[in-house]
Structures are given as structure tokens and as C-alpha cells.
Length: 381
Image (cartoon, rainbow, N blue to C red; front, top):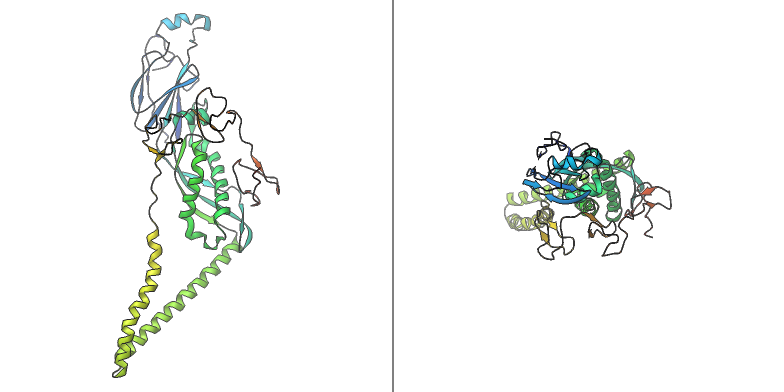
């Protein structure tokens, strides 16, 4: 039912036919005259954000909800004659898709600079996928969506890709000395990058549920150096294999001889299990350190304790979990009309300036540590 009809109340609901829409506004063309008593139906994978007179009034979870406005059927139209029969009591509903959006792509558009301790300054390309979910629907609508009627994954993917690449560059510069041992650290790198990105994504009400690195590719000449290093490792393993086979041959020879040879065979037979047990114990020690990463719980930003995903207030400190907006500097939850952050005093409307590299002059994100173009460490001032 349309939101500008004269008599009937509205039944408001939304189905995502594309599977790629974060938000859909009802009505799509501007705001409407949603009437008192309109019914809003929200599915399990959705949240409804109700705006009335220009402000976010409430976020609704799954179920059927009754909306209350000052628009009364027929009577409102009569009273709206000075406004050309259009009620000034405008209202709209933003339906937010709360499902996990999987298989979103990230990657370096241009190679990023990396200072390798053994190979010197090289340029790397990296790419992978990440999963994304809206965690704070009101904050997401207010900070990223704005007044757009439809907001899809394509519109958010480009910006988030730039953030991911910047954090990837910082994490590599601080934790990796050389890329020669890089393939064994993909999982460790992914987990570290996810921790760095939680705050960046949280400023927009988004949650990064997972990030995967598919490949980090250096230039061809660097790849050849890594292949040569791998061949050396194969030769070392072959030497160990030959030593083991020689020892086994000695044991069999001792078993086949009589007299004193029987004593030597018995001694070798007792010694060999102890020798090999130490070798295999070292090889198996690293296998027990892995394990599947556990999903991060929802954390109250004020007291740091775990809470349920549908809680509107923290049960430990009482802090409001329905976030309307946050401080761009410290991430403190702010009330609707706050001008200065109560935690750090930063002006609410002021945005952090991007960092400019003093060496090459390229522009980086405000919180970047290393330059994406030349790998130089950025100034903290």
C-alpha cells in the first residue's frame, strides 16, 4: 500500500530480490505520509529504522510493529491545504538487511611498497575475500547510507577495500620482516588484520565477520628467489631422509649377523626409537597450535564485557547499545544533539585529516602507519 494514499493505512515490508542490498528506503522516492497505525513487518534477517520529522525514532527487530505518527487518514489531508495537500509530518522507514554478506572482494589496485629485511624495497600485490554484516543499523544509516533510497554492496565495497589495503600494509610493515616465510603466516596475518579493522568498520555500524588472504604476490624476480629458497629446503629434507635410511640399513645388518653383531643389533634397535621419537615430536608440536578461529562476541564499547546481539542496553554498565552516531576520534557513542564528545572533547562534526607522506607526497588514510606507495613510515604528528 502506498504511503501517500488518502484513506487506507499502510502495510510496510521489504523483500531483497537481489541479495546485494544493505538498505532499502520506504518510500523509495523521498519521504511519505506514513499514517498513525501503519503496520511494519520485519523479518528475522532484517531491522527496521523508523524516521519521523527527520530524526531516527526507533530500530525495530523481527516481528510486526505499529507505527505512530501525527498523520490521521483524511483529516491530515484537509489540514495540509497550506502545503498543497502534502503533510509536513514526513516519515520513512529504512529496512536494513542484517544477513552476513559473503564473498566480498578486496585487493590492491596498485602494488604496495614493502621493505623486506633480505630483499630490500619490493612491491606486493594482495587479494582475498571478506564477510560483512551490519551490527548497528541506526549508525549505519546515519553515517554511511544517508538519504539514499537503495544502498548496495557495490557502493560500500570500494571504500572498504581501500581501508583493508591500508591496514594490510601497516600490519605487514610491523609484523613481517621478510616475505620468504610469508605463505605459512596467512592465517596469522588474517587474524591480525581483522583486529585492526574492527574499529574502522565499527565506526559505520559494520562488523567484519571474516577476512581471508587468497594470495600475496611479489614481482617475478622475487618469486624466483623464493623458489630457489624452497629448493634448498627440499635438499635439506633429502639429506635427513638419506641419514634415516642409512641408520635403518645399519640396524638390519646388525640383526642379520651373529655373535657380537647380535649385541650391536640389539643396542641399535633400542636406540633408534628414542632418536626418531625426538624428531617426530618436534614435527608434530606445530600441528597442535592451530585451531579454528572463534567468532568474536558482541562487546560493550564502554565496559568491554560481552553482551547479547539484540540487547539495547548493556546489562553491566547500562550503556546504550542502539548507536545513533560515534565520535570519529575515540569511538564513544554519542547522543543525537551532542556537539562535543564527552570522553575526549573532540568536535562531533570535525573529521580527521588524511596523512601525507613526507617522502613521496602521496595521500593515506588518517590512521595509516606506513605509506602505500613508498613504504616509508608516516609521521605521527
